[in-house]
Image (cartoon, rainbow, N blue to C red; front, side, top):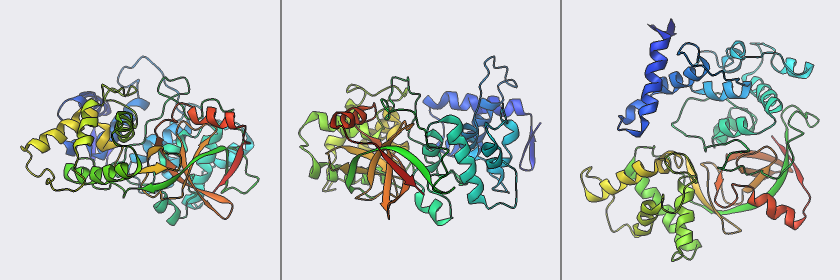
Length: 391
């Protein structure tokens, strides 16, 4: 029996329904249903309760996986973002005395410290930065204001923000740190418990950004106006007659993926690329207001065919770098922020330097360096690796 607020349901029925709806995501489903936290929560729960649904495979989940997946759940006690899921782990044995201390249940401990220590444990357990990347999601300003380390997971309510996809190191879809040695300093607290030591290098610097797109994933009117600002920045930065540049622009706005989540090819983005070319930066053509109008239908087809264009741009900025690259980064990034590749990072990270320390602004998609290309360029320059103290 599942107790969901004041309601009670048979758990198998809830999870089965949630999985069915997610499976039908390629078909027309009311947008308000997809914005419902309950659907996301139930579909996440289903992955942890395969035996209830008769799944034959067994999945081992780490603390980082659990913390990231259960952030969508509402909690009357924010400390339960960590403590309530410890019993759900397949193995609760910490790898060391230090790990045991990090996970010790203590409801008198400040929430930022709990999330910091649990994140440290999750990073040490996994050896990669996926949990940090997934949980930060460009909400740096709010996390810092609440006293959280910028690299730590923190308690937040869903804002409809889809994380930039991450993949395993051997996946054909890429791994930005491919070619670097494994991370070794994620458990190092020599600079204090609030400092995370990341090993890697600076690959680029943002020189200009658009405003963030904060209108929502189904606000096509807002998406239209934001894409106008992207096109304007693009025209000022590149030879816009080059077809390869338009492919890079289209690919950036869908984080390099097509609908099935495989790597996007030119044919996959042909319509999106054509649409971006047709945008008039003078805005003398009104945005879509009539849902039955030709432009509205074109934009609806655009969103349907690429899917990620409205999902992954939400609460993010389009930016151009000093090396001429284009990317999609956190809403709180700004000109001058660094594009960094760290050991164990499937995605590039945006860092901001401050008094010899660094703030983690969030993950980014940077076209052209998502498959280890930046690592190879860095090795060719024979530059030393840096250690970034992130607070």
